[in-house]
Amino acid sequence: MTDLPANITAVAHQIDAEARRRRFGHQGGVVWLTGLSGSGKSTIGVALEAHLFAAGMNAVLLDGDNLRHGLTSDLGFSPDDRRENLRRVGEVAALFAKSGAIVITALISPYSEDRARARKAANGQFIEVYVAADLDTCKARDPKGLYAKAISGEISEFTGVSAPYEVPTAPDLRIDTTITDLDACVAAIATEAKVRFIGDMSA
Amino acid sequence: MTDLPANITAVAHQIDAEARRRRFGHQGGVVWLTGLSGSGKSTIGVALEAHLFAAGMNAVLLDGDNLRHGLTSDLGFSPDDRRENLRRVGEVAALFAKSGAIVITALISPYSEDRARARKAANGQFIEVYVAADLDTCKARDPKGLYAKAISGEISEFTGVSAPYEVPTAPDLRIDTTITDLDACVAAIATEAKVRFIGDMSA
Image (cartoon, rainbow over all chains, first blue to last red; front, side, top):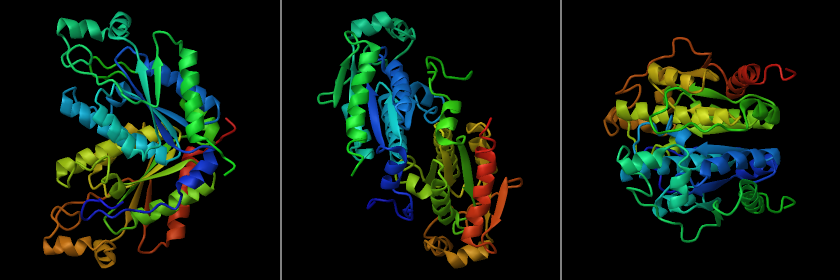
């Protein structure tokens, strides 16, 4: 760490990534789910956490909605607040990855720049999954009734209606939930996670 | 969760605390080290993480100095910024505890109110450890050269010199590092952590 603020000294841990890899049977890493509200991120996140955990992995889901109850409860939905929201979640995800967990994040995360920053925070131990669903489908699903409120103007700065979503141009994985069922979505992401984070454990 | 902000829906996880307890052999929880700069928090934190990890526990150290490199890099040392710093770390510690980890935090955390809030965030799965050392000893140790800078005025709002430290009135554990060596400090905290977070695993 070369860019610590003045008067802040880095503390070196005795337990390193290798010790944690041996303990858990996999490296730590981040599975970052991005997509519109209603695309299926939370549903996939919950199922993926259960799937990886059942497979013996130290899987942890961080859901953006739950985080707004605590860590990011002071933030709204302006561009600046969304940026800070994603910065914090990216940093926390990186802390979990460093602790040896496979952390799954489920947040709209509409800006490419913020997703790139989260990848950097995790030192590249990062799988960006674009949970794709066209806007009309998401509006029709409207699981939380938010599109209706956004269209009526009751909610402002809502992604896809009154705020932009920057489609990932080079995600590690793209899952179209309008044509792929939940089990298949989870299986595809789990396979990628195992390849990336378990790899060759005989090394 | 009854106090979620409007338009934020709580997401229910399939993997609960009990599943994680069975996996790791202990409950998740927080060991919160508080004390003056130079009292020995980081040294104890590093050694305690290694001790608990070697004992088979999923121990994770969050050091305040390291966090200021990322999660809390936007914050300074004013009373408001310290409060927000501790609020975030308390929330992150609670997330780790929820994931089944025994998270050790090492931050000065000078205000009783902020420590109480961190305890609440962790739903009481929390051991407050007062790492005690008198100010003169801490000044003499001055491991980072910060007391010298604070006394000369180069650093402002430095705990113990130009900012208050509210001594814990009812910590779960009080460790005096001027009379107790590192191994004994670690052993005392580890014993308390095992009693609290392992307990009776036959249940």
